Length: 552
Image (cartoon, rainbow, N blue to C red; front, side, top):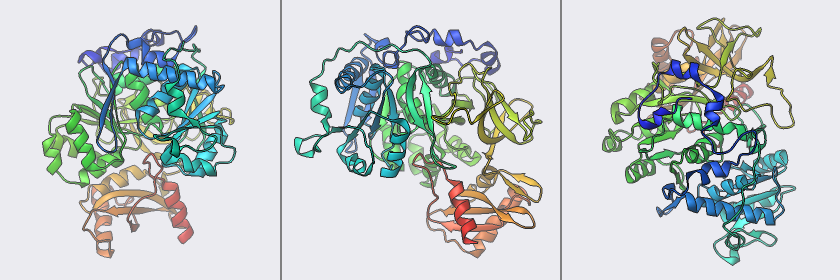
């Protein structure tokens, strides 16, 4: 594993790929994945007695607090003692329905210190989504705050609740007073050692194509998390790091909380909702140099214009994008306006980050591509018959499990190994691979459009559309058609001040014809005010497809 990117040099990608060694990657941890390891120790105790800042937190009202590694460890120990007092055993699941606050970090680390597993519940969820996930996991305790407590009233079979309340009159009868109970606990708790196959996190898929599935994440995922922070994000000691992804989802929990702490590096949490103005303010206020987020946020930044961007030109050393493919137009804008390299990274809850345009490794970057497989994984592109697809021919991205030492997924909870066939984990994503090994995302298998014998990736059409100055966001789906099998439909959110009409629709069709191809242009265009998305910001094309088919 290449670790010298932490010193400011960037190793050659090919050498890092060839020389990857799992034992070397695991040797960077203080514990043993075979004889005993604790994730909280790796995130806190391993970096003591260093008094360095571990957490920068900005509250909704702008109040700024910090925690060092000793303070995080002590808070985690108090939470672990509280959990033990409530009968939580190693292997039990503790859920957190919490905003981005120090309390959330304390609950995550406290659960891990106690040998329990942590389950994130995104605060935008309603009672049904929460109930589904708690039923799936069998969580023994839920920690939440006053703002989210009411959602649990509608959850059937809700486990005991620990409530974070500022005053006694905010408490709900029967709930555990989290603050009072935690304060009464000792800051000493001997961490429970587990092995690499033991459960660390209970995740759920994001639901882009249907109901969420449970994804058990074992402790042996830690080297994968660390590798991405070093080779994908290129997190260096001098960086000020901010990943805006919410820890209610994999990219935020893996790489905004656990990942940087594994390196002994401070992370940043901002409690308030995303806005362009607040994002610029925090980057400027904290002097952020290493920034990560999702294309949705980056497109909104672009739509806000260039006035604020000028003030931060040359400040951001590198920007990482994950969650959906990064459109080439976004890459060009950030290079032109901010003089900052923004690189696309691809991964899943099940795999961690898998294919990257690495900031920490030297290799060519092709705009619009997802990049190259991360050292420690082997991926293939499979044709429909299961054979290796030809170069530059679409196929399903698949992870070769036996030859991917960083791969940690072994099957969905209570669903066995349904997505694992012939030694491969099937991602469900269609990609192409070129002669250099560069992988380009085409779309989810369910999203790829077959029209008049052509296979059309929605990402290419969407990228062409958002290059038009009238378009802020676009989602492309295929609709059934007797003559062509499917036709392309684009659902578009317009920039402020632009009106959706037949003339603009015709202009956009011609625009795609000229910039992409005649067979891939959208024959149907619908203008909307917003696109349906998962709470983590991914476009739910299947809902657009269902709505469009139902309307015909």
